[in-house]
Image 1: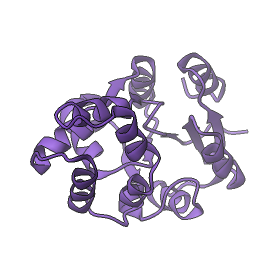
Image 2: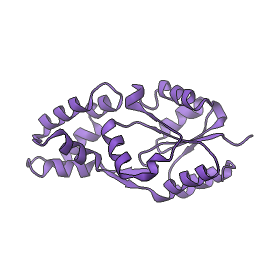
Image 3: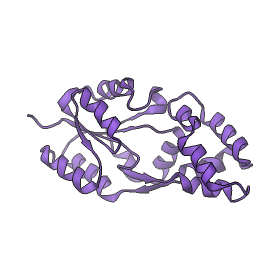
Length: 202
C-alpha cells in the first residue's frame, strides 16, 4: 500500500487539550452560581452543539449563556473567558512540524466554534502551520456526519487511503474508516506518532 498523501488532525484532545471547567469557574465566581452546573451547560447542552454546527451565531450564544449564568460582562470579556480553555500537546504539535518539514500536507478537521478558533489563532503560533482547516461551524455539520468528511475530501482533493486521519473519538475515526480513509484512534502521542511512522511518513 502506498504512503498516505496527507494527514488530517483532529484539534481538541489531539493537538490541544481543553477543559470547560476553567470557563465554568470563571463565570461562576462573580455570580455565586455552581461551577459544575455551568460546566454541564457548556459541555453537554444543546447550546454548544448549535454553536458548533453553525445553527447559532456567536453573539446569540453569548446572550443565551449570559442569561443562563447571570454573566454581566461584555462579549469580548466572555470570549476571552470562553476561549481560554486550551493547553498545547507538545509531541503532537511537533509531529505536525516534522510532517510539514517532510513536505506532507496537514489539515485540521474539528468540531469547534469561532470563539475558540479566534483564541487559538491569537495564542498558539503552531496553528498557522497547516495546509487548510475544516471547521464544523463553517460547514454546518459536525463529525461524524458524512457531510463534513466529504468537505475534507473536497478541500484536500484526496480520497480513501490517500488520507491518514487522527482523532481521539472512536465514532469519528470509524466514520473516516467507512470512507476508506486510513485512521488512527488517538489514545496517546506515543502511539499516534508510532502509527504515523509505520505509515511511512516520517
